[in-house]
Image 1: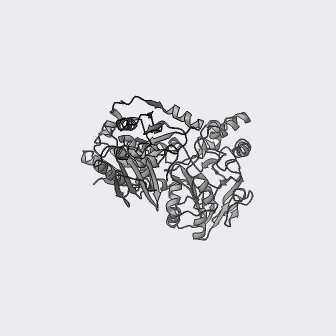
Image 2: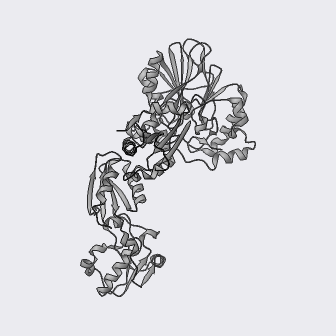
Image 3: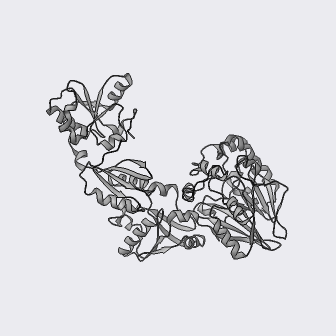
Length: 190
Length: 376
């Protein structure tokens, strides 16, 4: 499957430092939380992009190599996301979810991260509807079923839980902290 | 536009112990793994992507009137950062041409001494990697020991000295760098020698190195005597040149000793390593000058940039030679070993002729420090 991105930057054929210089410039045009695909051929760009993202707070998602082209995925940091006050009350600890998995219980996990984040690793069997599309797509979900909502740190999933409550969902849980601390099995779609 | 400095000029500064400041703008992981060291070098790290908006992050570490050499992986980012520093009023800023990639390949010849019956011995110092190779020339002929991959450097040197390269010897099957011995032997019509016990899996023809079969360089009496000295590898062989110099390969270094684990058999080879270091070498003259195939510490570079020591002095002060108990020795060389060299298994396979990566790939495989020593 191809990984979705909000914007694609072509840095093919450019040598260091240009891939990073261009990425830095281009990411300014994105909205917080959006994902950029950076295409590069410079082998050093992977380590540098990762280190650059760490030093700036952007989220490096991963890299896919296709026909000698490196496709790096970076998600633009959003200040609001980290600062958003959590309001949804029904919270499930990640450890609870993990325990349920071990027992082999049937549970439905809704992952509201961006498809690119989802693609680089998610809980096996999880359903992906990015937070931005939830309002249009909540009908894909079964209101009667118990639903565990997860994102990377618990912020987007909190907002998602609130939106779903407004839409009439009652049996839902916000999983905290989120995929950033998940150490159970991972599936990816690469 | 900022000026550039060549790897040759930088090497000269290091071996002359000139005080220099290096600003390494690679990312910190790469910097921590491997950096420029030696002489009077002071090196600071700040990744280039933190300097794009402003050079403030390094402003309190550098002064505007000192000479600064900016270094990156390949020379592109260092050029940009050097320009940024110049714009901010730093007066003498250089960018290292070709970056660490070129630095890794630079070989600096240093004369070790003249030989008794005419001729001389040179040590080629690979400052970027800590590898040492040797060029013996006498009466129009030359032998090279532990030839590095960049064979054109030796060819040019031989042309300058007007000698013909006849013998190419490797002390052992290397795991940290790709040997240029076979390639150069083919090119100049010379003979490539390897210790037979290290060459059981090689895919090409070679001449075995054997104790008692001395190699004569030139028409005079410059002898290269092979001494079987297993331990780093099962075949490791040392050479005594002109009854004066002991080329120890990766068995004995100036400040440390060889590690026995790079061919996967640490436990088996510990005994050999101990036997070589504590018995075989002890029977040799204390006055021999030890010339190893590597160095690991910048402090090992001598006054003129050479790496050498008297064998007797090493028995007095090299920590790897002071371990009384066999168990203690075994523990030292099998536990707490440094990380293995980058791509060492593929490097071994390349040196056996089993794989033949392209030039770019070979350069990549050799990146990083040599790590062939046990640091006691």
